Length: 201
Ligand SMILES: Cc1cc2nc3c(=O)[nH]c(=O)nc-3n(C[C@H](O)[C@H](O)[C@H](O)COP(=O)(O)O)c2cc1C
Image (cartoon, rainbow, N blue to C red; front, side, top):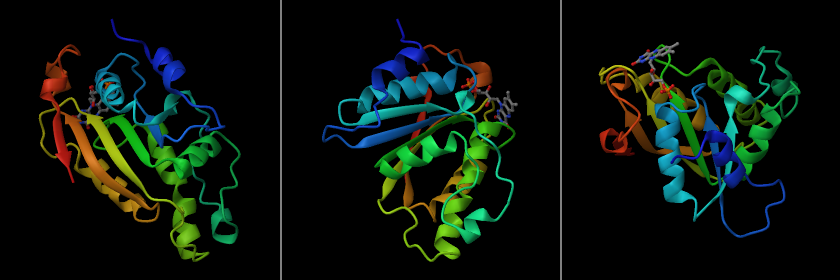
């Protein structure tokens, strides 16, 4: 039987005090459905990497995340003025050597909570271009994108991939691998691993 998402979080979430040598993998999970296709693929992928990484699992739908309000604080100071759970994302993102973005496609883009996270990375853009901090995150990380969409449209993931590549240019992050599942409208969540398309970039 599959562990539920709370179990994954309990089993794999690390403390702020990291005391072993394994690198950190940060999962930004962005499906509101805790037994949907995104969840299933993520669970499978985490099973394959859990021995090699300390995994920090953050569910964007369970976090207090306010949208970027273009207040320009990050042009004047390094960092973000808004005091919310983005702090936790930032903390682990900057420590992680692997970022896993797990998301369904919503209207060709990200679900709103994950779009909020993406917009809040504007502070890295301004660290780079207003404060000349290069790279704006000291360490490099690879990203694995896990994404699903309802349709068979082969362009379904183009926009989210473009968006990620754009923000990663100021985040010392490289999109390394995509694990994509099309056509969930016509699939059931059992035995989907064989249907996923893996693209190494
Ligand atoms: C608000 C909303 C917008 C969606 N937009 C798209 C879309 O643009 N293209 C697409 O192929 N599927 C779209 N879908 C379908 C989802 O991508 C699909 O149902 C997916 O399996 C949801 O992920 P989950 O199983 O992890 O919940 C949309 C679904 C919702 C709820």
